[in-house]
Length: 256
Length: 100
Image (cartoon, rainbow over all chains, first blue to last red; front, side):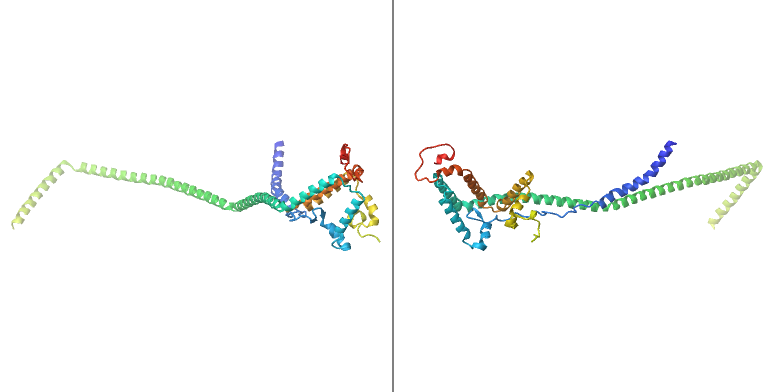
């Protein structure tokens, strides 16, 4: 009795489960929405070509622009000169033996930079370009891979749409097989019935033939029995005399 | 004379001179705030002068010059003893005193 309750509960639950299975994934896919935020930094903005401008290699251009409205073009330079003279005269900057080594070293560095700066820059740019080209290759290869994967997915999805062809073919095959079996069995039934009917017919024929033969034999036997000996002699004598007559007639004919 | 933007969110260049003390006091002085300020400054300098396609020497040059000036300021006290030098020094001592 408990098993019956369980069975009925299962039967009641089965359609619900089926419905839930049909409904669940579809509903989940319909309500979950991705990529709702605004895309930032996508695609990533490219690096700026040149850095901020710097004058004398030390002072950014913004400083010159900052002083331009009030003091014009020569303002910052005059400020620099005045400041340096002030520092020197007030000995805020003290001239030591190190000053001369500094001047020499800085002069050397400036000369080297002015002479070889451009070529070193080009060399480094080439290195950079190689690196970027490598990364670009990787990126393109990845994009191509993913594109191929997408195409394959789409093709397979399209295939999945066409599977009803497969089912149609299978259905046709099964129908054909059923038809063939049905006809085969029909034919066999027909043959069996005909067999049985033929049997009856041949039995009848055989019976009739046997009866005929038996009747003929019986009649012959009785007729033969009915011919007595006397009648046989008389009949034979008559036949002989007839034959003689005929022979005479036959002899007479060709002579004439 | 109410400002349109509250004082806390103005950048340094937009703060008027009279508001400067209050603006400074309003900044975030917690450790994370200070670290954030250093990080922001570093990011600004890096993205302007170094993280470019054709960077120049001035990106590093400015940092070195700032370091030179900073170390000069640190050692000013000892260097100021060398001031007023008309002849080469005679005695030698440790630190920057070897200069004078």
